[in-house]
Image 1 (tube, rainbow, N blue to C red):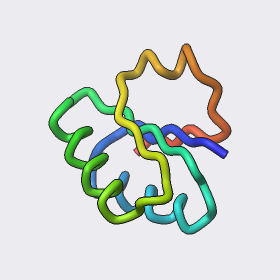
Image 2: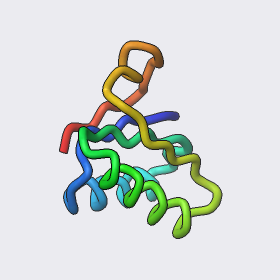
Image 3: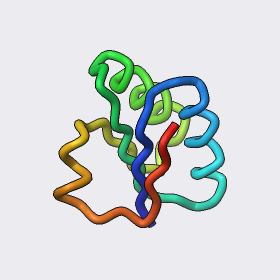
Length: 72
């Protein structure tokens, strides 16, 4: 399963943790602020090595199909 998280706040981090607990294997973090997006991606890649976590812009929603889209 794959998921898109729109937002890069603390609430988004809580949602990412819960999605990982529920066996989501691929997570895309979408944010307007590049530095916030990169910070969250680095944090979770370091913490969860077996989960694929990517940062991207909103255009990814048009290019890729997601099972879950979570707006934080």
